[in-house]
Amino acid sequence: MIWENSTYLWLLLLVPALIGLVWWRGRSIQRTQQKFFDLELFQSLRIGFWDTGNALKISLMVTGLIFLIVSLAGPKVGTEVREVKRRGVDMLIALDLSASMNAEDVRPNRLDKAKFEIRRLIERLKGDRVGLVVFTGEAYLQSPMTLDYSALLLFLEIVDTDQMPSSATDFKAAMEMSLAAFQSLEESSTEAAKVLLIISDGEDHGQSYEEALQELISANISVYTLGIGTQDGTTIPLYEEDTGQLIGYKRDREGRVVTTSLQSGILRQIASQGNGNYYSIERGNDGIDAFLARVDELEKGEFSSQEYADFKNQYQWLGAIALLCFVAAIAIPNYRAK
Image (cartoon, rainbow, N blue to C red; front, side, top):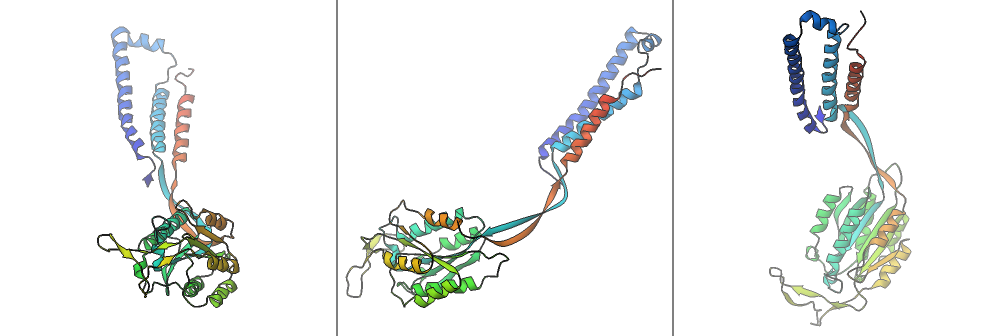
């Protein structure tokens, strides 16, 4: 047994005090009677008074008070089985970790802004399974599809451009890894919409992605893209790892400073062919809200149906007993005909 509001149990200390008060009052009346009245005269003045009924009324009132206090404490006894169903879409986020994502044309930089918006997206999801793929020239499954958003946020927190062996971008690798992640899912009883969201600045230095994209379409996976960066472009800063001090800018093999800009054309093309939509973040106040609104419109599937055992409330029965005690106490007369 557990209690919903165990603090109310302290009120039970009032019961002995109440019993003592009743006993003291009875003794006080008896002393007054003996002082001013003869016993026979007193009995004649109380013709028909029912001592047993009076004692029973007091006992019922005290018993009702005890049951009422215990009822207020909210006892929970036994178990109550509850079924909880979670419905949503299957969503995989493919995040570009190429060196160009360190550009600061979107504050604080493209990657940090993307991670911030992904966190906002995850925090607003309800029942959707979400996974995370990171990619450059290669792709890795950072987090498999999960309903545990806290774990997913931990995986997202450690994402950094330095973790990848390549600094280029290959959309084909991201698409192939995403397809494998979707295919590894267990089939649910109700088919849910499958969504791939690619977040990148659009610079593609890899192989042709047409075949990989067609395989995603054949698997009924809608491909959405989110471009991050500005059309004007900017340089890619380099910072000292220990101190965080700016030490220069990324250069190409000829020693020229590299400039990167948002290549929205390729991202628009991927979204158009992949039965999705293209969104962009070109300023610090832009967000992922438009994509989230689109997700809410997609078909939901049932991912899990779990049963939870919980203690069952029993306060209503104790409250009913308390009420019956009070009603019975009121109904019992103090006097009866002789």
